[in-house]
Amino acid sequence: MGNRRWLLPESIADVLPCEAAHIETLRRRLLDEFASYGYELVMPPMLEFVESLLPGNRSHLDLRTFKLVDQLSGRSMGVRADITPQAARIDAHMLNREGVTRLCYCGSVLHTLPASFEATREPLQIGAELYGHRGLEADIEVVGLLASTLHLCGIQTVRLEFGHAAIFNALSAAAHFDEVQAEDVFLALQGKDIPLLRELLAKVNEPLRSAFLILPSLQGDADVLQAAASALPTLPVITAALADLHRMAESLTHVTDVSIGFDLADLRGYNYHTGVVMAAYCAGSATAVALGGRYDGLGEAYGRARPATGFSLDLREIARLSFKEKRKGGVLAPWLDQPEDNAALLVQVKQLRAAGERVMFALPGHEGAWRAADCDRALVWRAGKWIVEPLRED
Image (cartoon, rainbow, N blue to C red; front, top):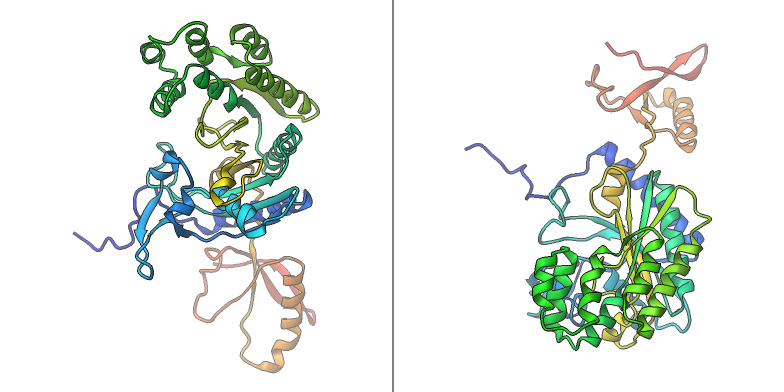
């Protein structure tokens, strides 16, 4: 068996130059957009103590988190699987501001298992979080920023689907579910497993039993909200949740190239989110390309409960799906051994680089290999000056 040291673990991959350049272009573009909305960049660490990465009951994150022992303290540490709890910790404990705080981030996370068959276990998570405002205005701002984010990335045919965690929570509370029962019903709803759902709800009284069973069918356009209002119990929490969803849809009527839908059984992040939840879909991807929603109270684990809402996405996946502008090739500059011959050339190279060109010096002994190094033009001496011409390389 030959040397296989170059092999990487399953669902872990290098990002090669062309794709890396595209990802970096999108990263800069999006962070600049976030900054224009007032979102401040934070850079949490890759490693933290497990209790900090997994505040409260976060079993879905626990299963996705790689763990190790800190050689300095002997305590259990984890490699972050999600940056959102870290941002909540920074808001609640490190910044400790009153009023509204807007934070954004971009960094790699690591998952024990890929989220889907083709997914990487090392997503590049980028996102924005808004803290300190309990009203729906914060959710509307965040959704608008998400729509702008996807537009800036050149993502086409975007569909935003909304749900509301409070609907399931209200039904579970009314049915007096314990934590295990709620989790079982949640998983059945997520999988839209109606036979299992009927079995789990066998002892639940009407009208709650019928309300749970109808949730998987409450998926589609704005008519879903009217159907939900007729089919679900008139609990104040559910009435308010449906009103929030209606208002959310109305707030996006001015956003072009985005269709709006609803899925009241979409409960991803059930033990994470508390209000409006969202998922973005686009052509070329069978799964959601961005997820978000309201998660009030997560900061309580860090000493200060704060209203919070936000979204995140995998920039590597977005780069795969987005429009890629053809990158201009580099300019090859000759290597001159005599210092007196270099002055004019170095001035020209500096000017080209300042104008955004990539200029590479032709190190000796590599003739015939510069197109492979992504050069398509060359600096040549013509009529007493340096000019750029198409690269001629046999």
